[in-house]
Length: 96
Picture 1 (spheres, helix red, strand yellow):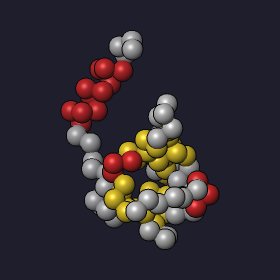
Picture 2: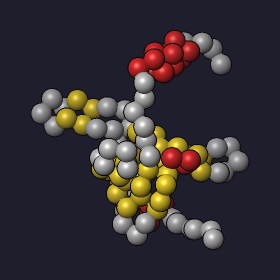
Picture 3: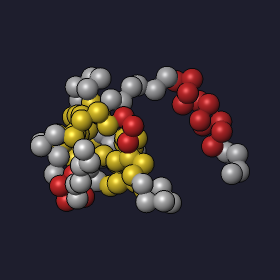
Picture 4: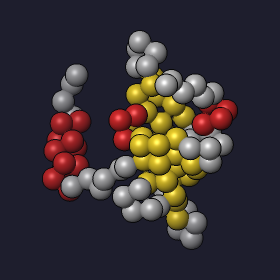
């Protein structure tokens, strides 16, 4: 069974992480590969109102989306280990 949803329908749904139960917000963007396939969704990063500190937006890979319901999108985002983040930082400087 194939599901067809428009961006308008997707952006009205809340995104919830089933790992910790946190609400990530609503969809703000959809990322496609060069063939037109959906790679993932983007939700706003966490913001602290008192300090006005903004974080990067959150990319949710398509494979981590577990269920798209009428009102909510359930995703499974595991916390990243610090060793993975440091490795990515070291690799970012390399030319591609």
